[in-house]
Every structure is written in structure tokens, then in C-alpha cells.
Length: 366
Ligand SMILES: *[C@@H]1O[C@H](CO)[C@@H](O)[C@H](O)[C@H]1NC(C)=O
Ligand SMILES: *[C@@H]1O[C@H](CO)[C@@H](O)[C@H](O)[C@H]1NC(C)=O
Image 1 (spheres, rainbow, N blue to C red):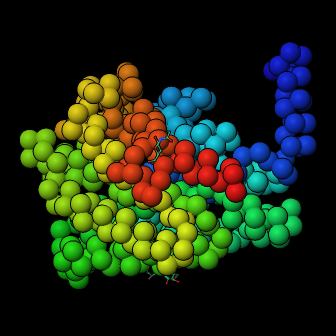
Image 2: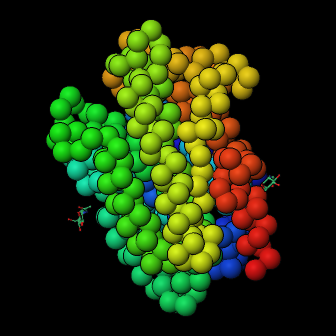
């Protein structure tokens, strides 16, 4: 039925005018996102892959109450950071809506299932691996240049905020995917971690070469404590020691690598976000953060709702605010909010060398 009330139509027109006029001098800085399912806002919807979140009950608490491809009941971490920047959410790079003026807002290149290594997540078949995300970033810059000119595009990229979240899948969907995996036969865990860090460093160097100058780099979460691992490996609800060990090796080395890169560049380009520590807080003390549980996923089946995928026939909790985990791997919107709160205002133990509030204040004056 075609029915428009005038009162809802008028603000829409005004909004469009403001957007177009204010477009090129968009107030907030651009925001770019790279990485895996923790930050994918829907790229995989456009790909032939099994790693997708485009069916209910995903998105049940999103403003549209519909699935979007985010691996969350509602907002994900990039959405909540965009809100802190005073910007709309960045669209997935593969979205046909990402064109014209909307390119100024930034873009999200993340793809669920990927890792630092090309051979991570091979079972998901058609996903956007890290090197490809960086190629898309280059392509994006050419498209932006065509609209606002090369010089403007370059400064928009230099002034942007960047978020990258990758690495968890290199353990979960590679090294530990099957017993005696190829990588676990090739490397002992400490050597594997060193290899990951050296490959990650190359990716970050490339990101810098492509113009990124403020990059939030999150570590992995507490890999061994997610409901999936409690269900598959944990004994009596204890976190998997192997995966916890992997995270405890990876995260500090990542932080050291970032600080060394900054030293080499001579600027605080890379910011280490200690998401494992943020997460561990509510894993070890859920009630302090208002959670009923940090072991059982809201959506899923089997022990801890940790087996298989979250689908329309899964168990589904009624109050998502009470669960730290939405599905077997991914935090709930409520947990994402707590993480972004720490990203904004956390102390140096969480955000090294500085939190996002400090970055925003600093960059506003230069
Ligand atoms: C990943 O694959 C791309 C494309 O084939 C290649 O250029 C890149 O060097 C590979 N990376 C690693 C770490 O093997
Ligand atoms: C951010 O970090 C700084 C320096 O560690 C700290 O003083 C400040 O309280 C933090 N939070 C905010 C909101 O700036």
C-alpha cells in the first residue's frame, strides 16, 4: 500500500539536504574496519560462505530487529565506536549502498571466518582474507578520490580512525580446528604465535603504507572461555587451558610488536586494546557487570548453548542483557558496550599507549 504521511516525509527531505550539503565536509572523521566476525557488519552476506549471520535471531535487538550480518543480537563493536565518533555506522564494503557521499563515512572490510594467515578459515570457502581486505582498501581510496579528489581523499584517510580485530580464528579455525592440524604439526604453539605476530606485523605495515595513522588493534578475547570451547574442550565449565595459553602468548606479543612499530615510525599510530583483559573481567565476575552468566550463550544448543550455530530453532534467552555471550563465540551487545566503554576511557592497562578519548582530544587539536 502506498501511503505517506506528510509529517514523516518532511524530516526525511530536510535530512537529505543537510546530508548532501554537509557531505563533503563531513564533521566526524572517517572510520575503517578490518578483521573477522567480531567486527564484520555484513560483508559475508554478499559471499558464498557458511560464515554468515543473516538469519534470525541474529539482529533481534538491532534497531530494525532484523538480521544484518552482524554476529550480535544488536550492535557490534564498530557500531558502538561509530556512535562515539558521532557518525553513522560504516557500511560493509560489498554493500551496494556504499557509494557516492556515503564513502566519506568510511567502510567496513571485515569478513567472518578470516585470520592473519591465508589458510585460516579455509572451510568457509569464499571469505575476504586480510590481503584482499587491504586490496579493497586501496580500491576504496581510488573510488573516494574520484569523488573528492586525490589530495582530499588522502587526508581523509590519514585523519581516519581504523579498527582491526583478527587472530582468534588462527587458533580456533586453524591450529586447533582438528587434532593434528597441518599448522600444529608444523609448529609448536610458541613458534606458531611468533609466526602469526610476524605475519600480522606485515599486514599492519601495509595498512600504514596505505595511509592509516590511528589504528586500534584488539587482541583476541579469552579464547578458551567462549561457550563453544566450554562445550567442546572444557572440563566442568573450566576454560580450555590450551586456548587460554594461546591467548596469553599471543596478546602480550601483539602489544610489544605494536609498540615497537610505533617506535620505528616515530608516532603513536597503533593502539593496543587489551580485549582479553576487558573480557576476562566479566568472565571471572559476571554479576559485577550485571550478567547472569558468562558461560552459557544466549542462543545455541547443547552444553552452555555452545554447540553448532545460532539459528531459528536454537534455545534463545529472553533477556539478552543478562548474557555476556550472544552465541557460542560472540559477545552480546551488552558485552560489546562494556568493551567499547573500556576502549573509550580505559587506563593504560587496557589501552596502550592511550584510550580513544585521549586520541579524539589529541587529534581534535592538531
Ligand atoms: C596470501 O595470499 C596472497 C594472494 O595469493 C599473497 O599475495 C600473500 O603473500 C599470501 N600471504 C601469506 C602470508 O602467505
Ligand atoms: C583515558 O586515559 C587517560 C590517561 O591514561 C586517563 O587519565 C583518563 O582518565 C582516561 N579516560 C578518559 C575518559 O579520558
